[in-house]
Length: 257
Image (tube, rainbow, N blue to C red; front, side, top):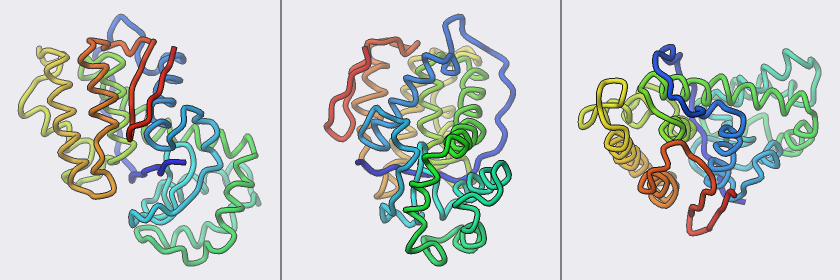
């Protein structure tokens, strides 16, 4: 299984002011494609639902990485997820770890989590309530803000996906490699459609900025999820992210018919 990545919390995105005639990434069929594309990069598999139980420390300084979007013990999003699960289902198998998750937030420490947290995570992942909590936190923190901003910028499904994949990896904090910083870097060289720019030109600028951000951190320095996936669709002019889709990540080939 490939390593998932994770990011911190992000703020609210502007409300949508533009939308394309074709289905956006929030269309159920397009969203399923988005989940598979991210899973190919995060877990080397199109079976994204198999990742509810995924957990490991990939050595990137963020502690444990787990679940369908790479929630991390060191970046706050895992803490929020486990708190949501506890709110919905008090006394669940992960609730006991909340004090430890608060202590290790912001670090790569496993203090208070080892040795049983990974096994208990996998046990919790059999619970549909925990699966739903993962879905809801993914949407609240990553998917919905990305789609809102993409629609605000007048982008179609591919552009909305480029935003989503960037937020999944980089979060939207205040640092130079966060999603908002990547977008600002792109805006210095191209305008999105909502500002009168060409969509393909803008997306190329955004992906250039994304690649720069990825190369700032060794754990993210392989840029194939952009170079041999998103850029492939962009070169094909597939701005609506319509199947069939063929792409590669880390040298592995994938297909959606």
